Length: 215
Image (cartoon, rainbow, N blue to C red):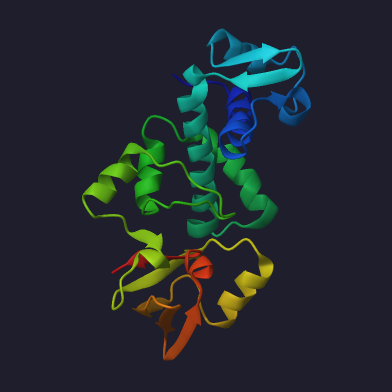
């Protein structure tokens, strides 16, 4: 079942508010809607949400659709920024437009193309799909955090999930850039890796923000 683009936007905001930020409901103001919003009426008719005054609650019947809506949006962000190299506000806008097209298995194909990423470019988690679970079971997940490599394993840097500017600058100054080869040599007490002929050490928090395509 496909819902309208407006309804998807409401579901996405509700998922973030309730499932990721721990809120019981979201206000009309938070969702940027009015009482007679067509998307709101559509979701009420599907029994995906319930409305109490100016507050909207995501029902269990709507959780799966909301989860998949968030998944499609964040996969679209990865596609725009990692593959098409469209970044910044333009990348966000294009991702918002493109996410509504990722139905009928297209999201699975995009996810596989991207090697099942676990976070969006802003560091937020991408809800996994069946393809991700299957790939993990078969050992075919190509992109993992540096912390999931074992000493001696190599990879190609796929993307950086750091949202903090200072952290991003630190990684870039090390030459930790998408497309570069990386070799993990040690995991304790720090994560030590080589990029080119240089060796660096970072803590676990920063290592988890380096995503590599295993080779």
